[in-house]
Image 1: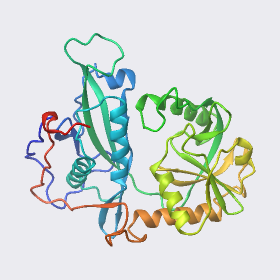
Image 2: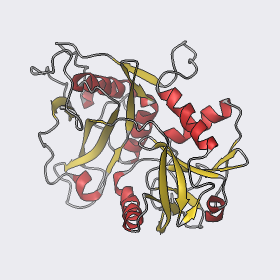
Image 3: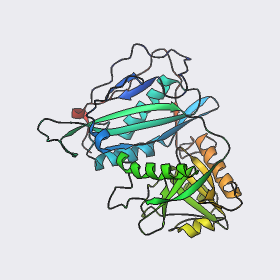
Image 4: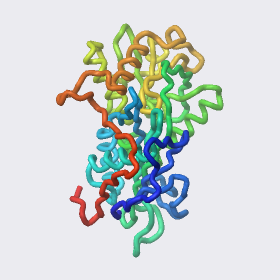
Length: 349
């Protein structure tokens, strides 16, 4: 990866990018126009799903845009990169956060934002035979941002139990967001939406609840929160961890324990957590109302705790600043471009 060159047509101060996709993207060491396709048709990550990605939110509060838990997201991304032998990416979480901050500053979104980093296998290196491979294949990293306003009120979703099962951890590294693994989620979501539902809940091979298509699952019974343990076939979500941390600090009991479909059917409340969904109430499951059939008081309280954490209204961290938040400076006429180290400059990981 080469160092990012200066950009001569950066957005002026006060510019606000159009809704949706940001004007700028970061791709293979440089900031480029986001609407200019650059990947070759032979991209290995496209052919075989050999990519890892993250979804990171940035929230605008009191006129300030702040990334939420970006460091934890990039720690997970780098762990996934190690799994797929993706080495030609910035070696540190700090570098990745700096690149993201700079990209957000350039795009100057005037609302909440969704950030999508993707690290993937790119092309066969000389001497590598065609076929599915991790070694002998070059790597690439791209970042894009999207305007993604927060809904405000607690989202209510109707879910179906899917006929598709979550792949087991001995078939797919479930701890990482590996692109190829999301084919199962796409099939389950398509099945659910074709039947008139919003999302699907997938079971594992033993018949226990794993997760929704892109979210973790919580059940509420008598004020106690129960969620499947991270030793199961599920992605240990960062939003999941946030909710567990905030609820325990508020004195709410949270248990990590296997859940069966019957546990969801008979729960007082069920909710989903993810970066995209935040905290969403499951009000119906496979034709049965969950609890009262509306977002319950515990789910509503959890959503409020989460919203406070994302908007700098939670408790301060050890240094006196709000936890988990990274401030994005406002754009200026001559944006600073962080240095992207070449592979020869990086420390081994």
